[in-house]
Image 1 (cartoon, rainbow, N blue to C red):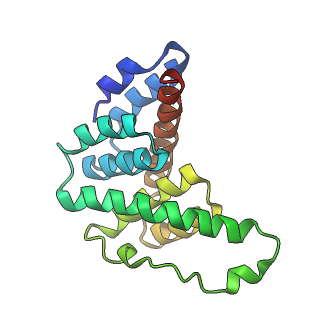
Image 2: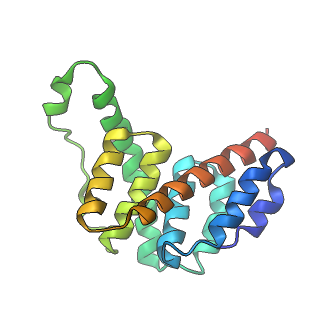
Length: 174
């Protein structure tokens, strides 16, 4: 993914974001598919339709249909889980943490792609939504699966740059 169209639309104040997008496009820590899925999941999580349309355009050239669906699934499930688990973590009354969530999350186990990719994509979404409990959970799974700290950090870096890109594009469209 090269982000050329996106970079051309970023305003002058987002020069650092543009440079970070360029750096991301040259990154080799994540595989091409893992990277594209992380970018797409992050974009979906920002809820910026304009950005997501441009990301999908590039992602279609890289990701399989299963991977595309899994990115949408990760973003959707994390939209629910990040709010719920961040809330029960932040509420002073810790009784909520021992109560069953009663939220359907079957797709976490049946997304149809590599489990590590799905965890990295979920980690990126959780970073954007700011759920510390979810970040810990996904990071723990990745560490148990012997995913390197560099790969985990790379997914977090992708999430941060895509989130900043979303904000920068939003600011010029208003």
